[in-house]
Image (tube, rainbow, N blue to C red):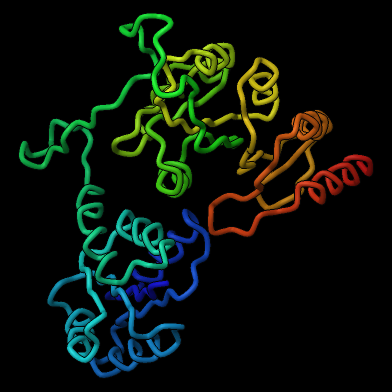
Length: 330
């Protein structure tokens, strides 16, 4: 796996690393080197050398640096010629870091491979709202993608094998947010994100916020549970790769009982409220949640319990046992 050095003036590098961990989970072989006012160039260079020496592979390193021509860049460049497999990217931002984390899951990719791939993604991460402020030459090309509502396609038409593909099914109280829009989307590559919720489908403000939060190239839709049941049975969606987001396990159970063919569910977040007990750092449950999840498990559905791909999965049985114990003690 490619090693990463985040280098900057001041605390920018450390802040990016912390924020990246919130979005993507803690990452191995990532170091920060910060140029502070009390440091000279030689002090900074020594910190860089110490960071590189701490890596499992000090010869395949990608440096994400704040400014081209600044002291951090210049000092790293002074070491660069002796290490032909190193690569440096300047103008580091959060989209760049997330894309680097995603790309290095492929152990066959070198620092050069990742740098070449990531540079366009980092530039695309600079966007403006209102969109009318975008310079004409900077506006991203529209990405053609089939809409969930495909009324133009005659009923009975079969696309692909006639069965919608679920690249990820997730229960998350927050629905479409940073961890989902970046990390999970990049890991699963859907062409649709479908939020399945009766409540949200009748809330115009929440619907609008969700649709705007979709990452570039992926359309987001909000549908009630019954509509999702209909879509899952419609052969016109056979060429669709969808990420399904449920706000509650109860909505998920209704969808499964209605015939939506779901095999595995990622439990990402279930928010705490009155009457619920906290069973992991992201999941709280009441008796109804426990019963609902057990009904889903009884139908053969397996659970992947983690917020982001980098997290270690929690045990479903241990989580349910803890919830029952703490609810009984209330």
